[in-house]
Length: 394
Image 1: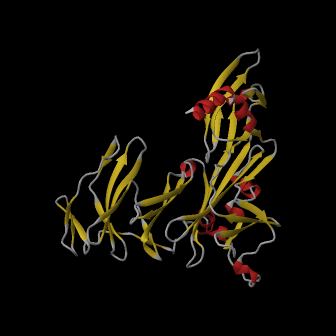
Image 2: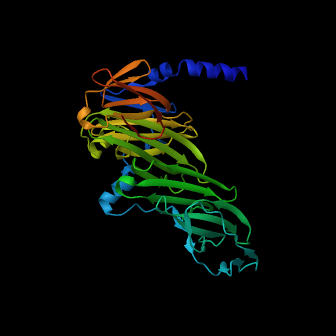
Image 3: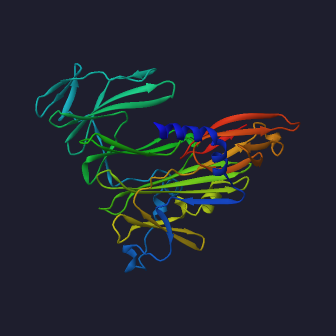
């Protein structure tokens, strides 16, 4: 108790100083990588040590944006099999009951608790290609979010319920029928959002990898070889025309059982007005558009990530899971564009400069003071989030 009282006292006494010191202004550009991502030039992946001349397609060509630009559709997922609808040879819904054909077991379906404001529709059945799993899907429409959403119950072929989810599995792993996967894309254009989920029904677990709505850049979802793990690379893109851009790139290696075995993050920010997305991608050294390959190293759980931009190549060594939060990009903007260059911003006791500003800081609450010509000032408390693009308007 004494420790927590002492901690609270110092937090209240020095919050502005600590938060101001953590704020780094971006005058030109900024690059950060998580501690388990180390730049290296001396390592070569296993597959290339004796096959240096082997011609392989860069992994970036499998990204959503690259494939869409070339083929006009989203990339295929040959490592996944779709979950089928209405396989009546396994089970059926009749008079509010779920009937399993193999065992004759009958289960009364209980309507789940839907969120407030939801409009449910009658449930339907899905089954895996091998017939070992039956899914009862309860669709509903949520008016406040204007989305079609789902609740899902998972049963074995014998009729034992093993898991419930508040989302919809759409595929199974081609190599493991007990791993469900859902590569989900919602929204459109400026509000697009990617979410990759892995479900382990016997453990009742679900893991999710997503980007914030409205700030999703490109995404790469693939499998590293026929037997290799899954790889997910996601971009969080922020772009404000009058000041610059930020790009966070998240790397995930997910094993065949759905468990995360390695992850890392990189953040790049640049102060340059009127950037288009292609220029941001080319400038960010660790963007998906620069990613050539992800290969295992001889050290277990280690991976070599190779990037190429123009005639320059960079290698990153990825080891284990990243546990540290990424720093947060913060765009500080005037409410009225014509006030640009006329308002002075202060964080705690530190003068940052005139709006607009671009900075990098830790997540949490921050105390800002805005000074106007003539001596007027206004104070603000703003929340800064990690794994997000923080656009704060004053």
